[in-house]
Length: 92
Image 1 (cartoon, rainbow, N blue to C red):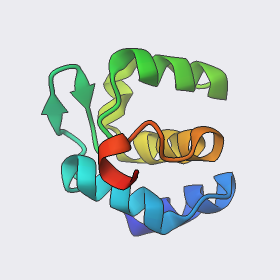
Image 2: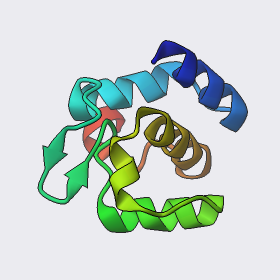
Image 3: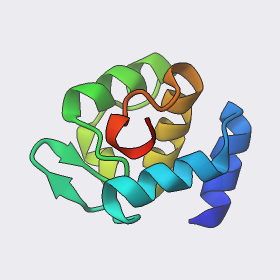
């Protein structure tokens, strides 16, 4: 998992440590974590996932929220465009 954090943090120009802190806070790095409509390591809702994935030009299928690489990639993109605001409990 560590190489994926480094790869996508570098690709999107974000701090790898922030991504790791978010994943730890939201799910303790559990890609199958569920809380209501929130799913995956970063606890994306279905609508949030679909919106950001559409902006990225990637598959918007919400089941991909449990895919480790896709969730790290998407979280990296979100942090690059919104900062940590979408995760107010974890870092703000």
